[in-house]
Image (cartoon, rainbow, N blue to C red):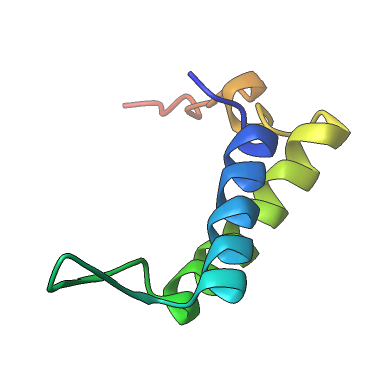
Length: 74
């Protein structure tokens, strides 16, 4: 499984590619549409937060917590 930091790098590469080459490509009479820049920017924001949490070591915060159920007397 890729880390959030690795996925963030892939998203940045996709955004850079769209900015440099555009979202629409025509080849041999066919038009192809790449990823939507606005959607990628929204995804990037989410993964930037996750990558920051991963880097700080708080990624598994919930995995380390314990659920305590209070004792009830009958």
